[in-house]
Amino acid sequence: MAEFFQFLMSGLTVGAVYALVALGFTLIYNASDVVNFAQGEFVMLGGMVTVFVAAAGVPLPLAALIAVTVAVAVGLLLYWLAIEPARGAPAVTLIIITIGASILLRGAAQMLFDKQFHKLPSFSGDAPINLFGAAVQPQSFWVLGGAAVIVLLLYVFLERTVLGKAVLATAANRLAARLVGINTTTVMALAFGGSAAIGAVAGILITPITLTSYDVGTLLALKGFAAAMLGGMGNPLGAVAGGLLLGLLEAFGAGYLSSTYKDAFAFIVILVVLFAMPQGLFGRRVVERV
Amino acid sequence: MARGGLHVLEVSNLHSAYGRIGVLKGVSLEVRTGEVVALIGSNGAGKTTLLRALSGVQPISSGEIRFLGARIDRLPPHRRVERGMTQAPEGRQVFGPLSVEDNLRLGAYMRRDGEIEQDRERVFAMFPVLREKRHLVAGGLSGGQQQMLALGRALMGKPKLLLLDEPSLGLSPILVDQILAAIVALKASGITVLLVEQNATAALGIADRGYVLETGRIALTGAAAALLSDPKVKAAYLGAD
Image (cartoon, rainbow over all chains, first blue to last red; front, top):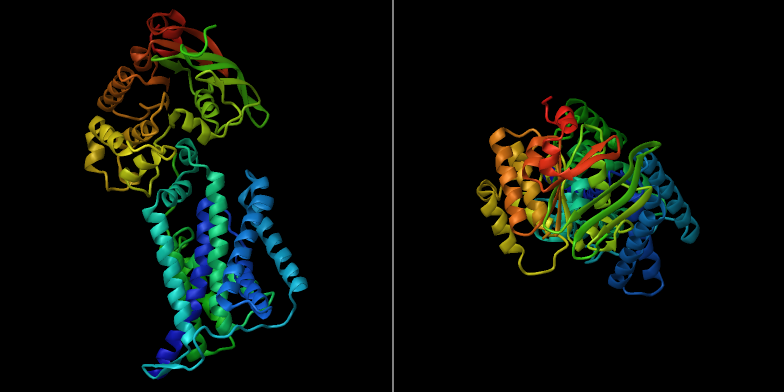
């Protein structure tokens, strides 16, 4: 039983990070139809910038804030310099642009920082907390709590503010959104900035547990994308559920079956799910209007 | 030509194309304060393209659009809404996943005044069924109700000029009458309307003047009553000989 809770907690922890990455995918996809494969690089920037700014003597909370700011700036630049000028291009072109941006950011990080792995100190010590016999790192609660706060903030923003509803309206019907006076360019910039912030926070929260380096973004983007697809692309709640589910699949698969095939196991389950339900677990059926 | 007080909208020599295919080939028209002007024409004549060009969501290649005397053809769509030109687009373009109430609230997106609540009540008074379904998602409404919602949403922008694209499309005769009555009521309340319709009889029946658009050009214009009795219009658009 202790083992079960151990796997459960580690699955939820890593799942929360996947959920945040998936949420970033969802936000940008909804506002602009772009699947942003540079999403993982925001996570990398969050961790790496915090590490290096903190190493320069800046207190950790301030370093984290700087890292989020840098990621948001990069997200906005990505939108204004690469996506906006190509507006009207087919979605595939835009996706390839984001892949290019991802490679560029990784290369820049490799030159600007280094190729080593880096660690951040845990936010509240390393003494494990005993939970139903499982030894849980305190940082796990930071990750879970941080993810919960972000999901809640995003929910309140989308459901309770006019600007948030404008984002949803843009996602639902871009033409109608423009006709009521919503500046859809601003909404898309907002989505890129917001996604970058969410990704950076995820990167900062997880770095004390998993370490970070210039290339952590690649696999995270892949996992986050898989989670978003699993939950149903474009559905924020689906993204969170898909992320947590993917984390749990990995943890239990690695724990009970084989840790060698940890990554493969999760992807196989996703393939099976998508084969049976192409819209994802929570995806809406796409109805073609005539 | 008189300017300012008299003309809400002046369009001159407007050209627009999809790729290399010209859709608007030099359209000129005007809408005066307080008028309901009908724009009729067959499918593919460019009616929807013209309205979209007026709202700024369809690029134009040349020509001028003046709204309340000022050039607006270089302004982005939201600046045109801000100046008082709103549009209910063709084909039930509501925000499907959002509630009826949210759809109406977003119609007032550019407004910063405190009367949004009252205006929503006015829309509800005009279409009581929307009040009943205010908390339901717009995508679940019937076609006619979505059309009412799209119209109500355009009204929430407090328009000086309301552009209506095929408001009667696909509706039952009773609903068509209800929408037409609503347009007449809007005119009475001082809103100027440019109405695009394939249903020429209905449109000219409530309009002051009309334009006939044929393959991107204005083919004919005149008082609505005159167009209704024009043999060419009758033959081509009114289904009579």
